[in-house]
Image (cartoon, rainbow over all chains, first blue to last red; front, side, top):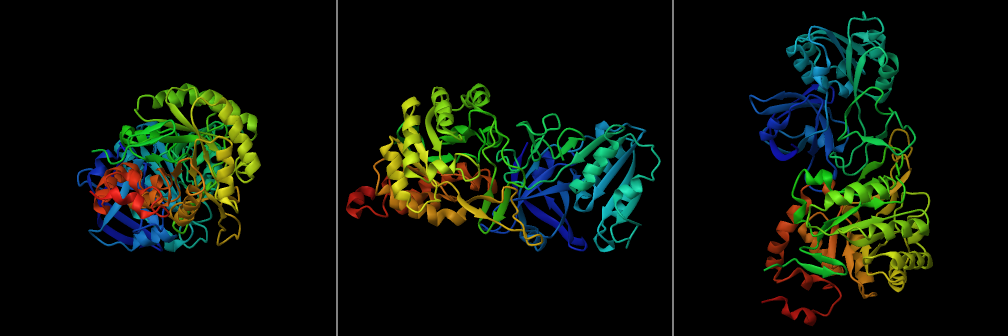
Length: 260
Length: 313
């Protein structure tokens, strides 16, 4: 169920250039059941910024009633959020959307997790769930440069991990697809989150041969499906009036379900 | 004692707070968050004869204390609204104000004739002010003669009172209000969004795919207050006020300007529980200000104070 709660900051730290890891505590955590869902955060006090900020959940700790987000402080809202300190209360609405279904992967089989930039965080909770289900995971994570790489060791602890950077300052130079093209074809399922061109490339290359699930990003208004800001066409009716809402039908869709 | 009940043409409101059209869908999403029965009324999403996808994305862009939207009247079309959305809303004891839109007069007439016969639709809101569609919408809302004619046409077929939603994108709002009053409007709702634009810092290009969009949120509240202040003195039909309401204090200010009820729009995105919060806070605020009933606040900005001498016990 979607709840609204003033959640307390347990910790916040900059883990890469302008990339912050924020852990919040509160009873809302008991509602978080799926990796890939997101929360809608009110940043700052007053009317500016006016709208909430959708941020994906990167890990859930039910025992301690906490969850963690990793976000990039880029605009006004996320910059304000990054300045908040321990014990401050943050206005959280969530959990929102339909996330990844780890059950879609085959236990004992191998699954590929592909993340680009700030699309990497939700894959962390997903990878934890998958490994618990006995799924072998391979991570391919793309970043701009070495300064913005995060969670490399955390992912390595769960499975094989490849890093790419656009400028080649860390890992393989290039895009995630440069690594994936050279991987052995052992995986049956792909879960991905990142920029739309990356998702498009994965969809066109693997839609026919693998089970592919993509987490989309779009500018949002309400975050709960009421305002129709974040709609996309369905693949069956690419120019008609049938639609899916990224916030409430997604953000995760099966490849081929919606027009990217 | 009920300090908030209001009677308007077609509408018996337990309180004068309702979500604004386009910010609340057809209620389902917010119905998951709280009991919609607490609302005074509900202005549901604009309905056109045929389904519409609306504009390409991005459809929203944030601005200083506001936001631009260019949804483009996305809706499932009249048939679906009559078959699915309105029957679902029947479970609530809340009058529905059906927002109707189109690209030609015939569209408005088609939707009005059918939707006004739904049992829970107690009034229509004639959307002649959407700035985000190429045809119709705002073109009906900026020319007084055209606005009067479409009002007359809808009045002729509607089974319920007709409220006309006015656009602020005009030079003379009073002239527009008087024109639709002459056309038979039973009430006004105002204001729709102000046309605006935002450009991307890196590319220099518009952020919205539609290039322009409608500005809403607290940034436009002073414009709404001024326009309601002017219009309420120049017409005899009631006004449902809207434009940047975030708090119970804002509601009182709209009443002072001349509104008899209000709609809350963009604030639902910032705080999805804003309507129940305002409904809870209003009686407390009214008491603090020395009023017995919210209707005592209407038009206080221009009315002679003696007429309100009874507002203190």
